[in-house]
Length: 269
Image (cartoon, rainbow, N blue to C red; front, side):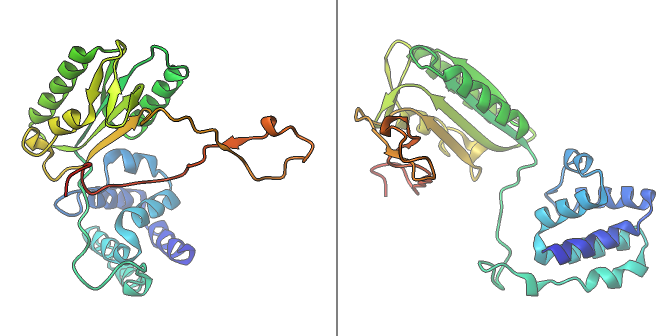
């Protein structure tokens, strides 16, 4: 990877500033669904930054074709042979095969997020809210906040958010719904301790009720308890001195660093 990066940088270094500007315009419009935005290119202000961006977006096996076509567009035929000599199939990753290219979501359109947070009786809620909103801004999400709602307010806000998505005329890339509250298995609680079934929220954004999100990612982040049992945790195994009191040792939840993905909702085939 480091060798390929160096070779790509070497080719890009030979371009004049006007040529590099035209090349950037080409890669931004490459393919029917551009994978590189103006913001990406502005961030990649150096030659090494541009090379790194190209490798990340077009993969090791696709970078040669992108470079070659871009160089042809700016008339640098003297560099085409060098770009064509870059490895293609020999650098395939283990999960790639000779079949059609893997489909991926187009993330160049609007990214919408809904953030619901119950602050009442939840220490640390303000910090969590700040962290998630900062993350959403960095990832270019436009988000709607819903703070300390009751059941009617939450339902109304979610429906307005969903209807707004359906009304977008320029297209949408994805939707992310974050719900931070107390809860239990299959539900969350409002500030008035009312139960709201998660299945009802999921249903609002299905392919029938939210056609704008058909074949688009619909991400739900639920920060809420799923039962009444409390996890006492375990002591972290590290190099702390043995004389340290057991209760003073750093503790971990019994279960942590799990990433669990289900193909369907509970009870569905």
